[in-house]
Image (tube, rainbow over all chains, first blue to last red; front, side, top):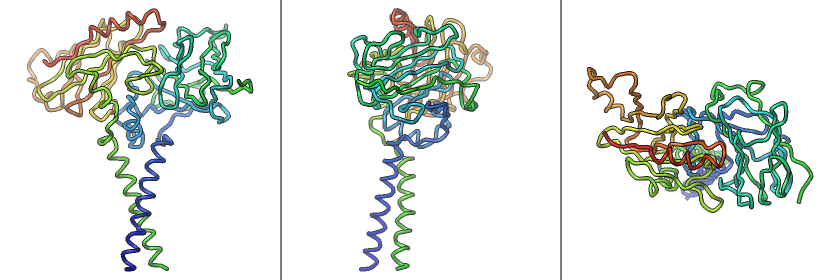
Length: 193
Length: 180
């Protein structure tokens, strides 16, 4: 009888720990080898055969096609530079310069990876569309309301993800954080709807 | 008391094994992975253009709206596949995925050069079976080895401005992947 209860206890713990931690790892996007530049995180290894098992599992579960390393590198962020979640009801300023690449795009998604409906039908910018200042820096205002300059509409959704993709770039697995890869700052303002 | 602790410790170890097994098995058991999502849209050994992502629908999550995308679902069981993707005005890339969504090779128009990206896709065995003495070993023929018999070839053509989307789409419409 003791043996049976012991076995049962073991199995319950095993199932709870095993499945719970798997679920946690997949939903929290736990994967290794992130290249962290400010708020932005990129996983250049995900576009190679050296992808880690956690990233593979998450990608299979979400149905994504990771960008191949000979094509480019993707960086995402769901938080600003201070670690606060991006809120689609507030103005967020993305400002600065980017690592060298032939082209890049900035796109706004729901956390599930869908585009967000808006009257302009604008979901992002390409490097050629962005209006820049004299020094070559750009400033994107991510806001629910119309803004002058590079306005990226949020549609007023609670939370969103920004993704920057660099195509034909020297960025990659060998890149170390810092000066060789400057990423734009992401700053939340208190200007909310 | 010690006995209960041992049962708990055993449960924790078993839990770790369950966790690792689940993570390793997931790519092979996921029923809504990218391959499964694209299978109804993409023909076998032929390219199909994916509809542009909209807020209502997206063939796979996190598609870049600045790109036109065409997908070929390849099958190498009957032999190698020849791939031709015309290069668009701005930027064109081709990425190869295994049946289980690992991007094992990607090439862009700069590395490919010329007016189109042309290469042969085959398994390691099919490559070994190639006759050595033929002209096909010439440097202009690029060979990519697929780790799996089936998989996806995804061609992407960039439009820096929305006005260039029709040109990017037209370039991909001429993309071919067919058995040799």
